[in-house]
Length: 178
Image (cartoon, rainbow, N blue to C red; front, side):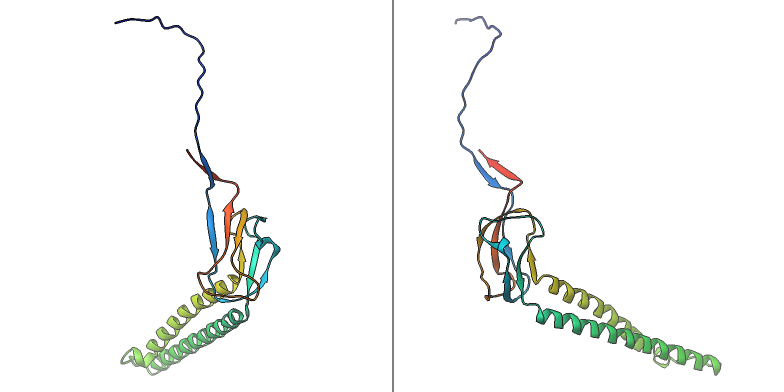
């Protein structure tokens, strides 16, 4: 057995390592509506740096504008139906009150019609919101800042829901794999 004396001092070591640096976010941007590509912005070209919210593509809007208009009409119709049902309930209540009579059931007061009208109104509001959301999704924008690495569609092409439009790689956050 041997012993050596340890002394305090500086030591130099050399360490070699291999690492891979990858973007934290690397995504294929997909469409959430179907239709024909009517505009491809210059920002959708491979190698272009984009910021969050930058317009990339536009999908034909006509069918979605029509859906919004239909949903607006349906909402107004539902509001009118509810108003008419409320009016019928008020008239029936006044009639029974004037006659000092007790209504035999809910139907005599038009309450089922009022409930149906209220449910119709409750259904029409989210339908309009969904139609407006789909209309807004005809403009495809960058969900985060980064570089366009690949464009997968061209002007005039018809795309379907879920179809990949381009690949986008984050340029601000990276992961290092050693």
